[in-house]
Length: 433
Ligand SMILES: *Cc1c(COP(=O)(O)O)cnc(C)c1O
Image 1: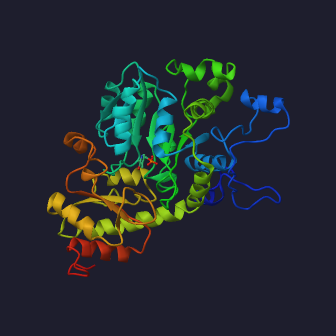
Image 2: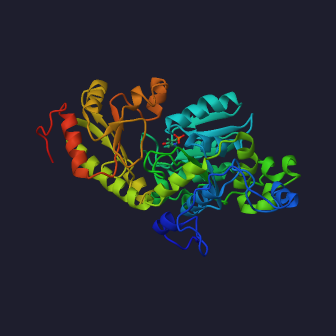
Image 3: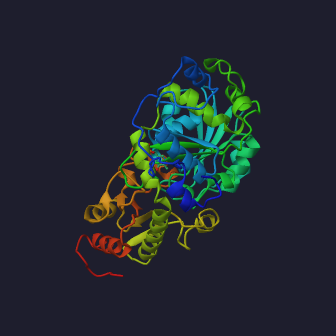
């Protein structure tokens, strides 16, 4: 399966092409180990001189097919699947950052990432500067230091749903001569391909739209193969790796240097790999990504338009709305739709927001976004409650903010549900339509 296919075709058939007589459906290889005929066969694998499977912590045929499909969808040169989205972000960073290094990160990133960077990476001696994602390239560049190793942002911020200024971020990272790492979880490769807009590494929580059914945790790191690591800043990618008899990633693996190192060094040592079963389940979800993303985007736009007209709502934020400050960026980078997550403020602040959430029936209160079922959460009292008020403000979280992850149900039913919840649970009260 090559890159000549369009996104929908890759979703359905990418990553796995059965040979004569082989299963039509990607098999689940639930095996930790692989059998070889001679010690020399296995030795060649341990020296990275031959391709094949050694041990599932480093690679597995089911996981590999899932990785290949996502790499094709993003237009990358290779990918490594991980235990979760958090594990993917961790792997993407630690592959090029050591104690004493520094990175630049948009302040509107997912709460889990904010904590990982601001607290846990700091403990490892990696320093992070968070910055306002509306800064122009020159201002971002000014925040760079000699030890800056990457710039990090999200295609769609969670939960602020701000669209990344790819041009400014790409210009800044080029100027700093560091890779641009993008979390593309909420957009998915169906709605946006960050490598086209200057990203060098893409990460996903596959737990969200890619699995799409809220059944399997997972993550993935995808290498665009479009960054020159031999610029003096990344010696570990250039100099011999003693743990593989002097392998030199850039010299020996060319454009795939980063992703090969992530697999053979970091997955081997940290063990944050995806399970074959989760790859199997996530791959079935991925087969319908293109259909689901269209419906998620249509439903979310319709609901955003409905909420915008309702006087019980103080504001609505959805990049697909023409009134949104993000609309022109969405038109540029999210041509097929603005995805399924929107936020709004209920008149009456925190109390009204909580009351609304207690009254919804189809929409469920869960700590999740981006699956087939509509869900709702109050970030200020849940996902973002560990942050200070100032940090919440920087992340775009206000006390009245409700985050709605619009599913793929019939949109009329979803609107009926929102309507009755806004009326304090009086089913089918006034305000219809
Ligand atoms: C959920 C999420 C993550 C973390 O992924 P997990 O699979 O929950 O570890 C990272 N980034 C974004 C944008 C997310 O929505």
